Length: 304
Image (cartoon, rainbow, N blue to C red):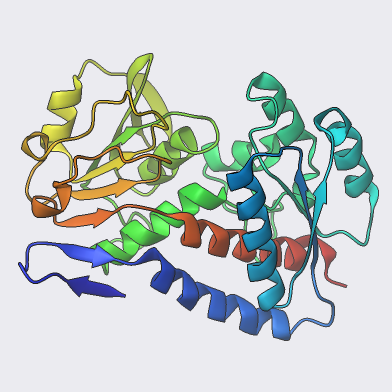
């Protein structure tokens, strides 16, 4: 899964290869089920990349034994569709392709999904558990593990792979300083919480300035971009804009692990010459974690 380039300065992690390892494990688990999980993906957009992603996701789910139906709906009918799927006992998982309205209404729609069918783990039920570091799906039942949001979980898995074995398995990022450029409620903030729950000191930046996260608790931070980058062991970027000032080699330490999950490159083109590890995408791992969440939901709430 890891390889070293010819200059021996960069460790590269291929998310596609790592994802395949998880997919094989998930497929084996699905084959042991008596019923194939049923998932419906709702897309209310004619955006070509979104349509392509929906089609690719459907094929990948079907390949491992999950029935995945993509439904094209009008965005004003999306609320009714979600409610109908929530009430349908034959449906075990719901996936919505965001953005839809690209405003606060998207958050409203995300929270309409029944938590027992919420593959993305973006509804308030799972968000509350994440922020409380509650790792059980149901209280007092250790056999049912809580769900985590797919893309933040994918990032955590990749960073753990790069870091290797941690001395403290309960807090695998203890002693690490992390800087994240993105504090969205979908990815950036949950990721900051997850890393801080796992022991990291996290500096989270967005257009409103920095916050510091320790043990999932945010605090005001008086630190500049340059200062944060200079002390970070891990730098994560997710700014979907070409106007973001790319992270340059001179801003980071030679031992830094760099990861980009934005739709555009947030690091300078030569970042591979100075970072210990550079991960330019997370897509394949996100899909694998969605599959993982699907099986976990099925086992937690739908298995007879």
